[in-house]
Length: 360
Length: 74
Image (tube, rainbow over all chains, first blue to last red; front, side):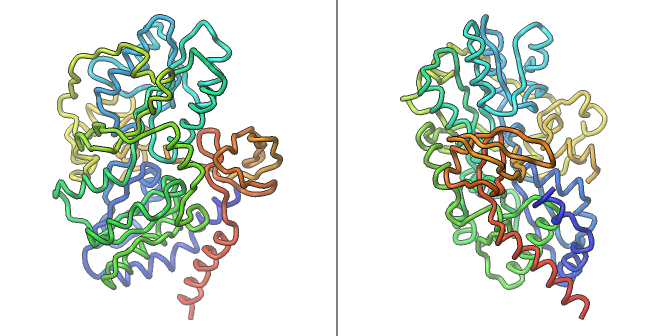
């Protein structure tokens, strides 16, 4: 496949890896904050290829994983409304909330359907006027514009039976909150390529300017990631932290202004809770009041008991980069993809699922 | 969740495009990339094109890999 295969060429990886080995003469701690990077690094065994001096730490980059139990419980209570049908991205379905999951609700007879696009949710509503279709909006800035465009479309068509429950979040403020916890020492970030296709490189400048961290916006194929690690190592060695774009074919410094405009038309910043990071002001996206009719959190009376966390689940610590999945006592015995305790094991892009499937 | 796939734009009608990935065709929205043209490659995510791939930059990136390889061999 064009624009993918060429970036998986093992032959071309060798010289990059050798150069990294030459440069990494001291410990370099890099955090990646995108579930797709987590998976790619695990799938291609990149940690093994890199020198031991380079540590690749996984952060809060999986949108499903950082969805709080409170939000999960709300989604589940929406599923229980008579006449309601949930349209959701696939990896939300098996994530356990306090007492249940969407999968369990489906097994109990509720209408829960997996969709590939929020537009499929819209279509579901149009084709089923007897149902109230609620789309679960989960995802960062890559996904939020697609949901925003769908909201605009629903409003234009005057649909009365389509709703959006937004659990969308934005990345830059979460990175700041993570750093301000002061728990981990980092030298740089491998930044998310597709979030950045939307937001560009400017929102990350504060990481280099105020926190003196090396930053490279990276593509997802193994050659992309290796080249990004090389660029990060060079920044660290030269003590010149800045924001560079490795993924030039996918990211412009100004991002995608049209997508950002549409996102801003439908959404405004809100204060939301991240699993593992707590409440981060302004890091969520809520539907603007002009879209109140579409907003599931306004249209439905959602009442949930205080969310309970699973005993022993250390998803929060994994998301903060404090431990690797193997550091959790439940990993691989009590908690497996077949019987997951927390979202990091359920989501396709969760650190624990990736570690289990590919090894670290 | 960040997964976006490169696809070739075969045709465009209004705000919808017919794209092709590895021999499979599908319809997507190009609302977020109104500047897109036929034969462009786009990144597709959740049924939308989110970015028109810069083929020149793609070539430059591949060239960098090759140059690194050449330096190694000297």
